[in-house]
Amino acid sequence: MPWLNPVTALVVPWTTVMLIASIPGALNPSLTDELWAMVFVGFLASAAGSLIGWVVSSSRVTAMRPKPAVRTRRVLKMHLGLSAALGGYGVMQAIDAWPVLQRLGGVQAIFSSSAALGNEYKYQYAQDRLATTNAALDGSSFITGSLGYLLFLGHVSLFTGAILWKSGMRGIASIPLILAAAYSLFSLQRTSFFMCLLIFATTALYAKSITQRPIGTVSRLSSGGRNRGRLAALLIAGGVMIPVLLYPIQQRNNATHNSTGFESLAQYLISSLAGLNQRINTDFRIATPPAEISGAVAPSEGLGAYTFTGLYGLLKRSGLDVPVAPHSLDYYSSEIFGVPFATNTGTSYLDFYLDFGWPGVIFMPFLLGFIASVALRKFLSGSVAALPVLVILIVSIIWSFFVNALLGDFRYLYLTIIASVALPWILYGSKSQRIFSHQQELASFRR
Image (cartoon, rainbow, N blue to C red):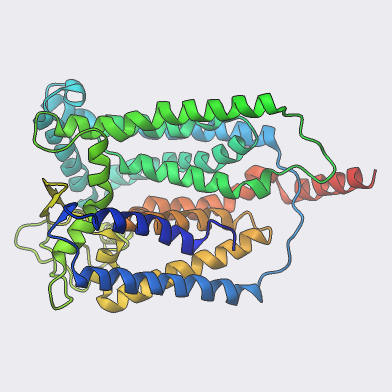
């Protein structure tokens, strides 16, 4: 396997958070044996699924197929159009949030130094979105929802942007990340930006095999040009990431006892682990969380409703009788670096357990690792259509230490399907164009 694979995607982040959480005094109460057991079982299942998927797929995947050259100008045009759609999606989200801002006195709720106002804005905005997603689909909501899903496809620009980034067009490639950062600052939350960043960065790492120059050609980029490219990358990364990392938590925790600045990042990293640690009982069981609707009971076992919250919610709104898990779980408190901290997250293992019990902690990581390895093998054999599936699963495994963000949001599942179909067409054009391009490339090699 290449160095970024389903196993390393699991080992690196989980080892990091477990080491931080194991520092004396970092977590109170400290990590329990039950927590270590769940993490260990989930890790073994994921690693086993990844290795078995890699071995099994070797006999079913053909040898490396030569690919035609990427049509950079075509990708650039598509990227700009997709970025415009992503910008339109952000505008649509801002319009949805405007009534909340009006109730709180306007846009100052985002920039106010009062943590109470920032937290109230984030809470009310989440409640408004929850009411919308729980309502049954009617004519107007169907039209609005369809437009939202259409504009959400602008996130395909994360894939095209990564391709352009590897081709040297750093500024234009970064447009979707800048838009994602703006939305994170507007909504005072960071997870959506991290998802976009991880999708972009993971695609860029794998895109080297797509954008590499044909044999026999020489790169015209001098060492000075490469150095300027690295400097531009650092400036873009710093200008986009640092405000998103620090500003939302600064606005929500300012004038409170909660941490701000870089200390909040360490709390952010191990907060889900702390939540899972608090939820696991000494008999290796996790209690069912309360439902969001008063008087109702959350499903137990959820049979997929917790892992695929967005999909099950959409099916319920369509009139199907399926279990629906709470969009937000109840809060548990612990001390992180001596500061009281309340969290309602508990890593992806919490969702897997609430859906299927301990078999879910084994089966779901195994399945994710297995499919990710098969997608990796197919991509390495030349299938560009496998890249979106591979990237979404790798990012899901990387982020499993915190929350089940991508699988739980149906929009990303939908994005994966569309991107798998559209990406080869964006990069190479129609099938006839690909054949013609490949023939030209072979002719140039002969010359």
